[in-house]
Length: 81
Image 1 (cartoon, rainbow, N blue to C red):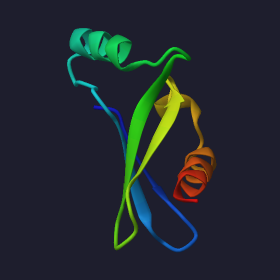
Image 2 (cartoon, rainbow, N blue to C red; image 1 turned 60 degrees about the vertical axis):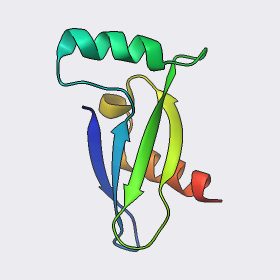
Image 3 (cartoon, rainbow, N blue to C red; image 1 turned 90 degrees about the vertical axis):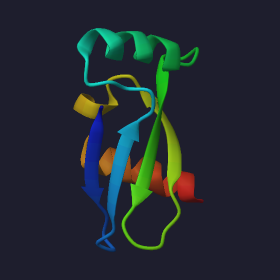
Image 4 (cartoon, rainbow, N blue to C red; image 1 turned 60 degrees about the horizontal axis):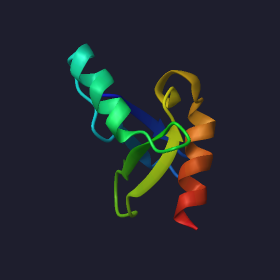
């Protein structure tokens, strides 16, 4: 499972998890192919600590390795509007 935790300026910790991922490498690749949209993006669900509402982001497949914490937080803030 691809997961990242990021903390915003209000000290809310957001746990972002890629939908349809697997810890098994072969299954993970197959799941990623099924989960990609036409732009090569995958669904990522970000759940906050505390009372804020979860958000769903559409991010490039490599979001886990290539997106900075700040980029993830910007995506979360945009989705909350």
